[in-house]
Structure formats: structure tokens, C-alpha cells
Length: 273
Image (cartoon, rainbow, N blue to C red; front, side, top):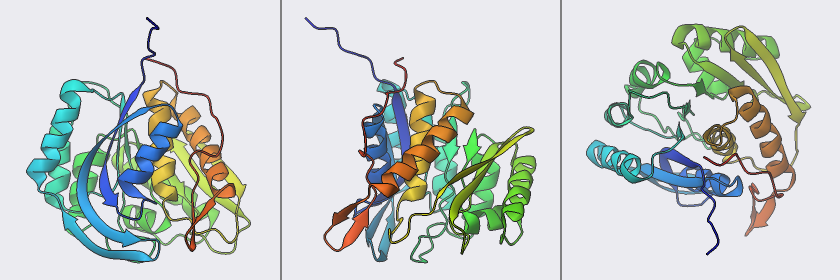
């Protein structure tokens, strides 16, 4: 009998996107494209499509916790990412369910506001996010509006991105990628990575005419997949930037919309565990 390969496992804890472009659906597509077995804990149901979020129904904190515990019982992941967490109670349930006795890479995508403007994190939940999860995170990946809230400054330039990254790292003790895709007018999509004293710029050409719904989810999911496979944090971040750029460049048409293409090429799988 042929010996089966053993896949690395990653867990996403996030909301469900009924349009399939972001959230749990984007994460699992990305994990699969990168040769990782994806597991999930759904925090919220959202009624949404590429135009926007129509409604949100949160799962009970107890059910969120049960999902995470069920995954760890039989399919212990080598890396975890969080996306839309929505409420203080759900954040606390996630923090309590994640095991504290092992060094587990945790990537926090601090989803706060949808591209359409819908609020995806209740106001009282921000403090719980910083206190309960960022203190344990390996990496946090805010976009410009999220970084402005976490760092307490307006971001209008690359230098502002650097300042925000430094403040977030110093304030919460985790590595950070501040994603500059929301900066207007630039020809490059610029992100700032900071870990300890290491800081570098990530650049890629801005692709015009493509709706980028789900890019933050895909980026953090790609990092998580590579960490699950044993990559270094810096290697995982650099890979994810290139992977996302390819998914945008080779985006596809679905009905009247463009969607990211996580299967844009055959990529090397993360190392087996």
C-alpha cells in the first residue's frame, strides 16, 4: 500500500463570508492551495456579497470554544490565525480555548471594519483584543484603519506606517505587518514588517481595476500556512506578500465581480510534519 504523506495542519478562527471571498472561506482556500489541511472555528455568520455586509449573527462564545477544543483534541494545528472575532465575549472564549502551555504561532488579523464600511468588531471588544490576544500573538497584521486604532495616530505616508509598526510592537510585544494598501495615490502596495529590531519594506505594484475584497484574509492565511509548515516568520511574510500579489494579478471573473485566485500557480508545499 502506498504510504500517505502527512500534512501540516492550520486553524482559522474567523467569520463566515457567504459570498466566498473573505473570512473562513478565503482562509480554507488559501490553506488548501498551499498544501495545508485547514481546520476552522466559525465565530459569526455574515450575510454578505462582494458589494457589502448585509447582516451579522454571532455564534455563542461557548460554541466557539467547543469548536476550538474539538480541533485541538484530534487535529492539533501547528499554527493558528484569527480573523473576525466581533465581540468581547468571543475574544475571551478564544483566548481561554487556545492552549497556553506550548509555543504555538498565532497570527492575529484584527478585523474591525469591512471594506464596505460595516463594523465587524464591537467597540468594547478592542481592549479585549489587545489584552487577551495581542499579548500572545506571534504576528498582528492590521491594515491602515486598524493600525490607526491600535497605534493612536493618523497614517498618511510610509513614514507613518513605520511609526505605527513601532508603536504596535512596543505596546503589545508581538511582531507586526502594517499593510499600506489603503494609502491613496501610490504606485506600489507597501507594507512595513517589524520584529524586534528588524524592520523592512514589502513592495509590490498596485494592480488597478481589481476589487481586493479578502486580501487581508488571504495574506494572513498564507503566513499561517507557511508557519504551520515550519517556515521562519520573515520567510512566511515574504512568501505571503508574493503569493497575494500573484492572486491579485491573476484574479478571475465571477458573475459581475473579480475575485482573488488562490490557485494561481502550483507552489511548493510547506514542509511535512
